[in-house]
Length: 639
Image 1 (cartoon, rainbow, N blue to C red):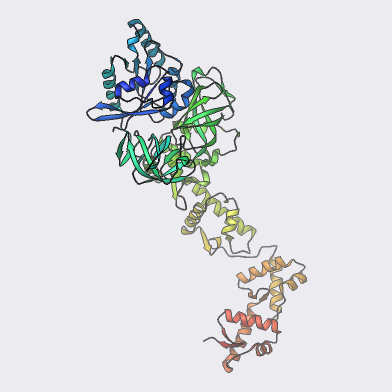
Image 2 (cartoon, rainbow, N blue to C red; image 1 turned 30 degrees about the horizontal axis):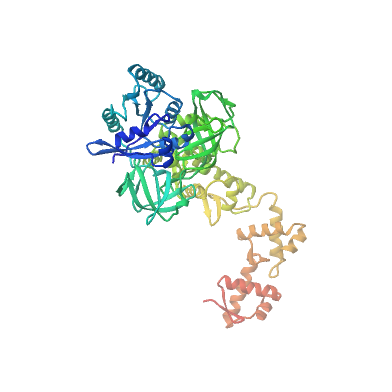
């Protein structure tokens, strides 16, 4: 099966289904109501034999204006269109709308079948051809083949088949690369098999036995079987019309409007930045804040139009806009949407997705209704993929751009995006690993490093008595929104380049030594003198604070500084000694134990002339300092 999908479109009762039956031998009106009323209500799919063993997929879409949403669902992902116009009636309203829809969806190839030629004389045929030429002038069907034919008499059927075959063979073959996506148009149960869904693969490929994700919702299922037009296959790719037997999901868990995608490959969008184009037949301006129905894949959902501060756009105008969806959609950059008025029941605009996840752009993030400049989007729209990548990364600023999401936001397949990222890493992009791989503009990364240095220096200036700035305190100083992986990478780079030093949790400039500031110098000296004069029984911090008329917290902060400077020793939670006193006590203890096997608290208290409170705290301190070892309630000298 050639991976080409052709859509048959046109006004109701112009003979699409009869024409497809004449080409394929298959009647696509399978519903009782369709046969009774003589119109197509649901989508029909069939394979068309081109000869030489080649076949393409054909989708027959409804022509009645009441079923345009079904028509749009069927037109998603088609490679070419067969526009059907009855020779005896010529161009009709749905002929025009279907052509507009195909153009808005990005269809670029097609031909025209002038059906019911047996019902029109030569003059009427010529008039119909002239109407078609006038309609298609300036569109992708300008100059396209127009083939007169009749499903009743067989006139022109083989000529039409040959023209279709030539055009299908001339189309570039779709790549199996890219993010796998299948918009679901049908879901049903088959006894003994379970849930089956159908749709047209519009990107990537899928294999039997693989896991797929249902979005929105995120539920996983396994591909049990694959069929392309009734033939079991091991794999299918973009352009194939596919039926998938899913294991692990009930019929009610998946249906029209949902997507099957590669697990983890898509983040559903609730907003999208787009290039918006209104139809010339709009009839009046499209105003900011208007609510429309957006058709994407097989889904249709209410959407509000944000024109970035513009009041309205005129018919036939192109403008940058943001779409606010009333629910999640699985969108990629480059996707096409059709926008219809539910009041007028008419197609009025189309949109091409420029960024399906605008919230990733820190520079352009804002609440709904906040006016933003569309200039970024204009530049993004005209940028080539490498420049677009750099723009998206730069717009993420310090938050960094998540690589996996960039593959959704770039208008090329993931493999090409990976190659662009690899090339960009040599220039202005930096890759940072972590829970999620991030890309960061080198200029932004360097600015983070410079600001870290500024913050560490500022901390030294404002807190000269401290050994450095803690990592936690650094994060609170303007880095709360910087991902941990990026901040860690910036710190690592500064430490390796010896611009800053790390001492446990503390960060300091190279060569920085804690010192007392001018305001604290006198207090530090007074506290140091107090513990030195206290000898073997120094005053408690609360006593020092009272004598100096200071707050205990301030005294504790200065004692901590003295300890870090080696000018005080912390013996217990609330007891500080001068180093000279500790050294004297240690000599007394070692001298005593040189002539005695052990020493107990009472003996030690008498040796030092202190109270039990001081004696116990000092003995425990010397145990920690590995001078002594406790044995029962006594101490012996550690050898």
